[in-house]
Length: 526
Image (cartoon, rainbow, N blue to C red):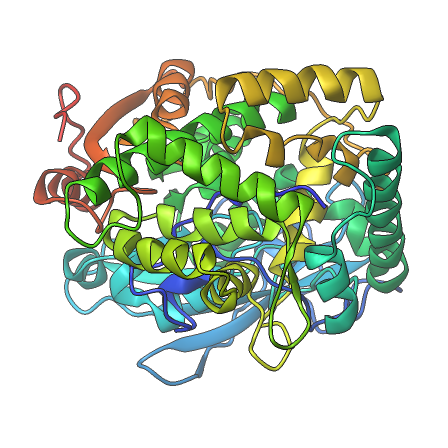
């Protein structure tokens, strides 16, 4: 398969297997199959009545009453956390039929409470439940924890919520790590990749059922409004990282009158096509690789010699070499170019992980695949025993396949591939042909990609990092211009996302906005 880059906050630089900060630079496979997606709305949901209103006092339609008025029963689930499960319509256009489960976890405010703050870590496919429960201090700082109930949730299709299910672990290994037999970019190669993707989508349809057609971001944004009401908040307060910025912007466009305080950190540009996303991300990671090399070459332990350009040529030759002749691990696994690129990309999410990248490069250039597989496995959420931590790979693809349009015409894909490689000469070719993954997906994109303006929404804070590899700064600039009420906060630095990971300037701007509603008069340029 082609390399796919997930847009989510990454490791804190330690490159460990902690189920927390690591979680969101990573993909994975599945455990939970959808349950309860047939029949009528369960009887335990509140029944609609003409006089019912939501906990916030707002009036909703009788069809939505059972969802907006449901009582969330919270139970202790350790680490000073409370957990619950909410119900949402499977299909928001037919809310009286099937339902999905939405898993939530919250940490109650430790000080004077402002309200609830819902947090999404990105992906798509990242578990907000795990993000908050296992990495509260990575997701938010102490000031926000004092003022807000911090609420993590797994969007529909993800993790502990009604989840997309496709393959068992052995099948996921084959899907993620197998190496096509034909030469890259040839008709035979495209056919191999397309068959792999088509088989994967068919398995998702078989094992996920009706859920697969309803994990789009618009449906998730409607869930978000229902959760807001069920939590008792008249307006939504929200902190979205990476893909979570698209979810937040989509919410603002659907419910501008319900926007409270929204922070969108590591923004996506909602108007871009899938091919443009890939091209811009390829440039972002290529630039991050060059920044890593500039730093590395200034030290005494760098595995590269010469200039940055010379080192980039060495990396290009290394990728080409394993593409032609994959390296065998001691356990028989084969390291091809796509897996090696995944291993390179993983530590590029945060500059604090660059020393680990040097160690990995040194080992691979000596013919040792151990670290490369460790990094790629961590990115893919694969455990050392071959099992997978969650279903984020399946969810990532299922959501993206419904959120973008795709074209697998070989001529179009070759033209896109040429543009991507021209923009990112070292890694671009290994990120091309991504349309093969979704062009034959069982359920098609039915919406329209375009700018999001959210007219009438309260002020929204958009945070962008100047050398963010996964969600490049130009996207933050674009989203801030699109939204009618946005203010951009720029962090001049490296890494994916900035809040609680960069400097006091960013943190103070975000905290003051969320806690007091103070909007910077201009970009503070942190």
